[in-house]
Length: 103
Picture 1: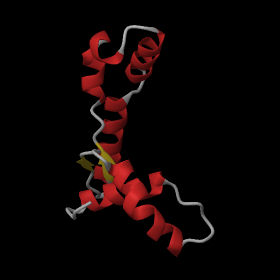
Picture 2: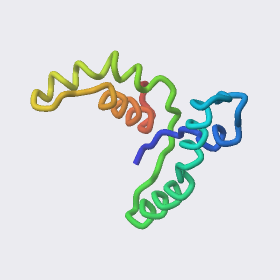
Picture 3: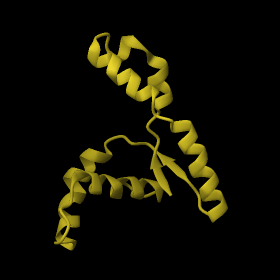
């Protein structure tokens, strides 16, 4: 199983200086603080272990951009029924990183 390592721990510790001081920054800080990433990560790790799977965390840098630019069109050509978005392409890029291939 390949997942993006989004580093919300750093965002929680950053505080006002990086996320803004106004209403928008306060909303973003509350949203990030309310995401139970550690609990999810531990549950996923435990479930994967019992199923005999490995969880790989990869760097999320530029996956959406690469997915839009290089993977969206090939995926759309192979699947005419589904509307392919940049998120589908990003999933391909994340999977390739997890397998050790170039994005």
